[in-house]
Length: 275
Ligand code: DGL
Image (cartoon, rainbow, N blue to C red; front, side, top):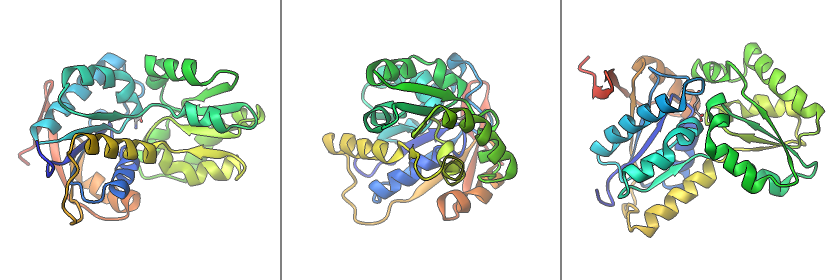
């Protein structure tokens, strides 16, 4: 691994693209490899043990392709595996996602904040620990938005069904005076325009991706691993799902087209697909 090695980024699907776009804005000279585990999406209704096993193998796959830093661009995988991955690969810097309860609690005026995340994220110790550490004196409401990850995977960022899912989650929160909403799942920032329309402009929506990208930059700088090249970095995409489906969505979610390579799970191992 050296300064020209890529960053490795993964998620259950397209959610991590909300982190990838922040990484590319913050670190435009870095190459990136992105893996979407769409064979297993959604992660959020699976057990933490199962998500940890997927995350371990995906991390191995990315490190085998030279990744110099791993961004666990998925709150569910971070809840299930971040601590364990850091112990398993002490030589690799990791950044992960944790619900941004701290900035929400620091800036709320109503004293009521809402977190949108998957059931698995709410079950993890990481979530319990951020609430315990940062939410003193603040009411934290939670919603899992069932079906929303699937809608984003289907590119339905603002369809009627997507709006209904969001209304069901947000209306009870708004009735209780929520003035800050934390995106605790990396898929959800793609629905921010729809969320903002329902919640109104007085509600602050926090996407933690820019802060995570800045943290990735700090870790690379501290280890002397920033790419010194002035040229724009390249991004390579892999999916364990349908490559043509992800290729079709990338222009909408990232604003540019990219080819996508297929990978396949063979038992517990990920392999480049021959087809
Ligand atoms: N994007 C992921 C997260 O941040 C996972 C969503 C899912 O696959 O359920 O939690």
